[in-house]
Image 1 (cartoon, rainbow, N blue to C red):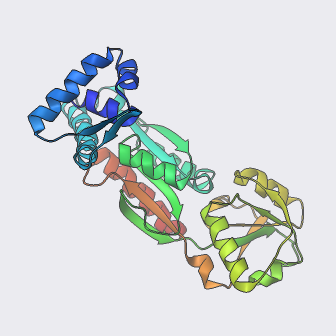
Image 2 (image 1 turned 90 degrees about the vertical axis):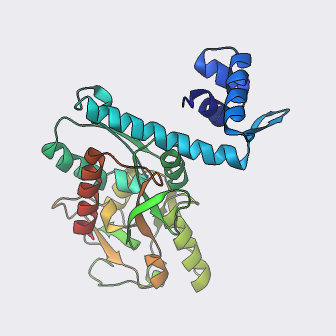
Length: 294
């Protein structure tokens, strides 16, 4: 069954936008939707003045249609022996902290084993990662999360405690563990509100009645780490977000409040999707690297 017209309307929210995407008249799209609804026997959309609103049946069919499309592509790739470009592309989405050092390390390891592959990596928020995986626009998602992610299959999850990151030689760098209160005399560089790191930091600050001097807020860990590297400023982050080499210019120290361990790294895929063997092997490499780091 051809779901192109249905998914175009589902994604765009209107017949006109779907027609523009497909380069056909909106009336032709409407006829295709009507034929599909007639063949299935249930309405897939509610026609509203502002566009097409999916019914519960429409939402369920959208998930099925995306999964079928991906599995069909995988089957064709096997039938063709992997001799076309799409068979060698792995589409990844990741949050920024995991994409800076850790994920390139995984890609290098996989590429050295399977040099025919190509990787498409997009960096975005955990919510956006999950949405991309749900829609089938990404094969694998790698995110930080403080709660189970709904609407996706979590293939692997492991704790990734938030630690204090500082330059080597910092006055607190020799301690084995730090209460959050010990950071009060020092300026902080933090990620924006809404990130998993900031959510837990703000929660613990409220619990312990603490206030800090925030000298820098940035959504890019590279800029934060460079600032911290040359000052007494302290940042927060997981050990996995630091360089995976012998560089010791930055160190991380565990924080004593157990709430800082209420964060996990999650590997996400589309629910019920039958993954092609090549993608399963990549995910095995990814999970193996996560286990090694942890």
